[in-house]
Length: 346
Ligand SMILES: Cc1cc2nc3c(=O)[nH]c(=O)nc-3n(C[C@H](O)[C@H](O)[C@H](O)COP(=O)(O)OP(=O)(O)OC[C@H]3O[C@@H](n4cnc5c(N)ncnc54)[C@H](O)[C@@H]3O)c2cc1C
Image (cartoon, rainbow, N blue to C red; front, side, top):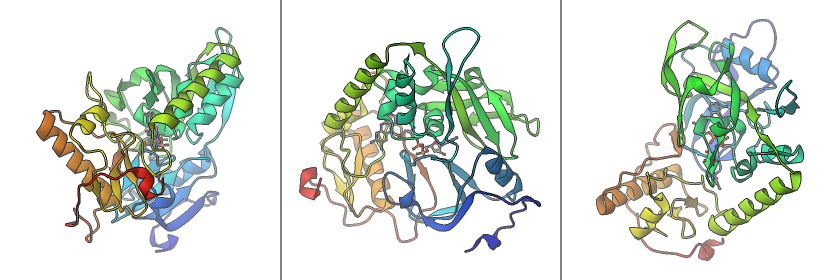
């Protein structure tokens, strides 16, 4: 398919971003697998993205992603346009205020680790945990990403969003329902575009383009040391040498998903090329040949087994998009055996 197959009504001024067609989503996701997106758009900047969205046909599906580190794209691929923000909306700056410590502004496409280092460099504390999250600022805001007791929205002062009709909006944390790995627009919040009230699952047709972070003064060396310790902890506890998407399930209240999965004997459980990591049971790794259906089948099996054996219903943290391939489904060669990851080239 080429671009002429959708009617991009962008008026007289030309778009400055890059349109790629028939893109294998394994190039854009940390699981390194998944079907093909009809179109991938890499905006030149915020104005270009707004113009792009404004010109899209009403029925064109749009998915906005960052680094794809929490995303599984089914093997049947994605209809419509995937907008990739990583490295695109990448402003990162200090904004002085009349009173109090300066704010950090970060565009949605900035890698979280960059924000952590930037904050430390400017002697601001509170963003160290972002060093361990391999996603973008936009993804972290959409997921309320966090680790080691800290969460993204604890440090968000204000955000900027862009709606499907190309209109920018400033929003405050109070506009959202925010909890562990969950962000949704509060019921009754005006979307500022058609005057409609948005509610429910966020983001839907409105996406984060950047955020202001409120941090507190601290010596650079203290923040740097925290970042170092956090990264060492991660290297020792996570299977970082095989493609994965971090924790697949949210931790249930008062417990750890990894503990429950391990207690069911599922470490090393494997379907096709997807395997429950033997380093961290809440991670599913792509041992090299996994298709998305393998990963989804492992997710389902883990969820069902944990429910049967412990009564706990695990809630999925990773997002899944796209169509099931006609050739996929749970393969009949599903096996259950334990292998050490280092036997698979880790
Ligand atoms: C090794 C590893 C370790 C991880 N550790 C952690 C951890 O400790 N804590 C944690 O919370 N997560 C962790 N993750 C998961 C992941 O990094 C986070 O969820 C991260 O915030 C996702 O950011 P992203 O840019 O990759 O988002 P993507 O995966 O690209 O997108 C995730 C979701 O957010 C939406 N989204 C992305 N950008 C925007 C935007 N600008 N506006 C609106 N919606 C948007 C997408 O549509 C999608 O639904 C880990 C992942 C890996 C691979």
